Image (cartoon, rainbow, N blue to C red; front, side):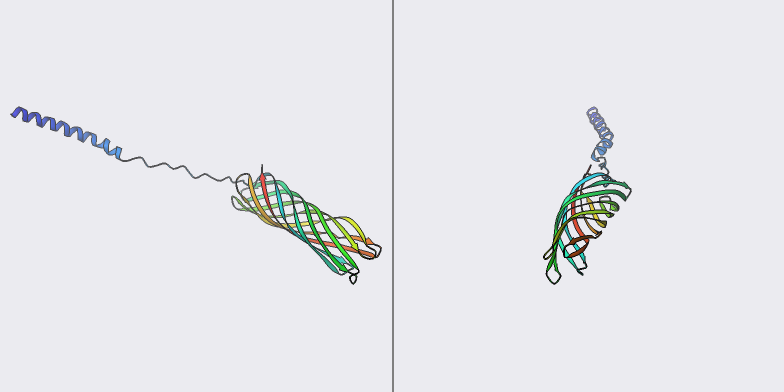
Length: 227
């Protein structure tokens, strides 16, 4: 009887010691290692650098001062075309050169000489080359200003007694401002305003002569692909 009791005690002691030895392993298994999270991706910092090409569309208003008619011709219409250039970016600062070629339908007219004559104006093509400088408020948001030269092909006519017609090319300077948003490393969208001051052109006709001096305001939206 004592022998059997001794055997039971020995077996119980061995089982207790085994359970105690395994406890740290089981406890370690109950706790998983903390999850490791990947660092948030860092957005590209030079989203506005490189060559780009895009399409642009908008509206324009042109006011022609007339001399000696002592009045003006107001015209308005739409314009659209292609825009392209290159920008260099250093931190938030952007500097570049861009140009565009635009087809337009900007027309207007005005009677003068007590209604005997009428001046008609029409601009059908435009192009310009501008310097562009900007500052990125955020990696994908750019505010910019532009300054450069502009050209416009126009039809000028005087109808009525002693009328005449002439194709003219206006030259001038332009300045503007806008904002551009990079949608991803290649595509961006922008809006801008531009003021252009053209030099005057004179139309001679049998009844006299008339000088046209135009100023233009344009608002445009553009979609751009950056290579």
